[in-house]
Amino acid sequence: MNIRQIEYFLEIAKCKNISDAAENLFVTQPTLGRQMSAMESELNMQLFIRSNKGVKLTPAGAVMYQEFQALMDHYRRALKRGEMASYGYSGTLKIGILSGMEIGVEIQDMIHQMSEKYPNVRMELKHFSHGEMVHALNRGELDLGVSIDLAFMGMQNVRYVNLRQCDPVLILSRNHPLAKRETLSYRDLKNEELVVVKEGDCPAGEKLIVEECRKYGNFYPRLFYADSMEDAILWVESGLKCAIFNTEMSFIHSPLSKYYILEELKNKKSWIQAVYRRQNSNIALSLALEYLE
Image 1 (cartoon, rainbow, N blue to C red):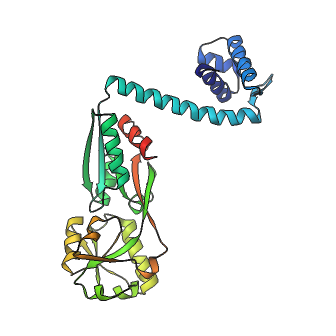
Image 2: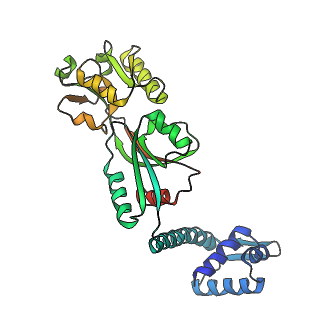
Image 3: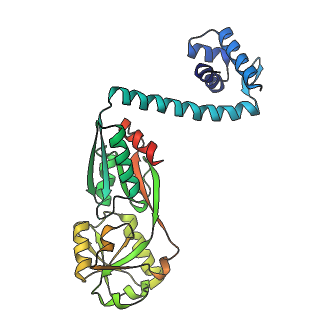
C-alpha cells in the first residue's frame, strides 16, 4: 500500500462516487477500481459497498477513513517541515504576552525549539494589555497571543490552545493592613479599592470581579482604573490598593507583595491560553502550534 492509494481512497470516500473521484484525481475509473481492489486485498478488509447509486463506506472503511485522514495530515506536515529545513525557511512569528504575566515554560521551550530547527524564523515578542492583544489579533498584527482565558471570551474568529491552569488571587502589599491576616475572603474587601487595567480593557474580567464581590461579599466593588499593568503593579506594591489577578503574574513573587487565594475561589481555576486568529496562514504560526499542541 502506498500514499497514492490512500489519497485515492480518501477522494472516493469524500465523493461517494468513483466516476467523480476519478475525474478529480485525473485517472481513469478502471485504474481507480484496480487500486482500491489491491488496497482491500492487502488490508484483508472490504472498504466500500458498491451499488448503481455510487459507493459508501463499510464500518471498517469508516474507521480507516478517520485513520488515513490523520495519517495524511501528519505526512503533509512532515513534508512541509522537511521542505522548510531543506530550503532554509525564513519568516516572522509575532508573539504577544499579557503585560505583567510570566512568559511560561511552554512558550519559552517553543521559542527555543523553533530557534534551533528554523534559525531563519525571526521571533518578535511584545507585552500587551488584554484589550490591545484582542485588537492586534483582530487586525492581523499579532500571530499568537498568550493571556488568561477571560480576555477572549465571546470571540468567534479565534482558536486557542490551553497551556496551563492558574488560580485567581488577591494581591496586595506586604505592608497592607490585610496582609497580617492568615486567610481572606471577599467580605474583607468591602472597604478596599481594587485596581484594574484601563476601563473596558477586559470587560469579562471586570464583570466577574463585580459579580463575585456582590455574590460573596454583598457589596459593589470600588474599582480604580490604572493606565497600564505597570501602573497597576505600582499601586498594589505601594499598599494603597489591592488587585485580583492570578498566580501567573510575575510580581506576585516579589518580596514587596503577598497574595491570597480568597476563600470563595479555592476551587476555581482559570486557563492560560495561546490564542490565534482562524484565518492566519503564517507557516511559522503552524509550526509553533504543532509544538504547543
